Length: 180
Image (cartoon, rainbow, N blue to C red; front, top):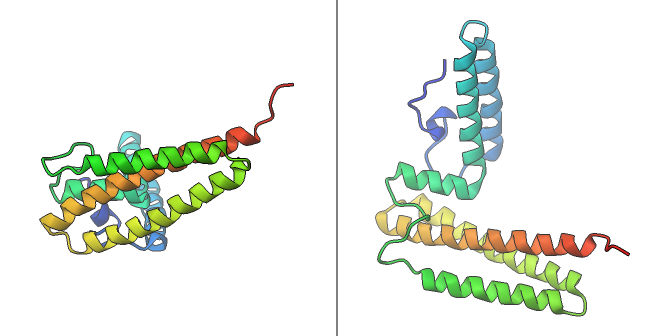
């Protein structure tokens, strides 16, 4: 049955790191699920269910970049983004978050809010791509300094994700039929 002592990267026979091949991850996920289901005949149902749940959790964690980053922080023994230390540059992140919110409000109030909201999404995607590239570089050399910097990049990506969700909600709101 499944070795529950392995970390998620070991489970899928992947090198520990932020950069990964999603195709290889998907192939190995399917192979593991098939193997566990084949073992079902010889094992208890509870064990099979636990193994499949662990495989699914590992796959979801490694597939989602922010979850993968948080998992890497845990593997490296580094405090994640949920709490900050003395060097926490939260004020910079807060200023950026406030600027994004102001841009979102301004876009919503423009004469063509649909186009303006699309522009906001484009800017968010561009900023996210730049931060994602930076995160790959930082995790490629996981020194304490780089991991601390990666923690801040993850915070920024989380802020971008929140703003993206809110922007998409506003776009969807615009498309909903209004009561007569």
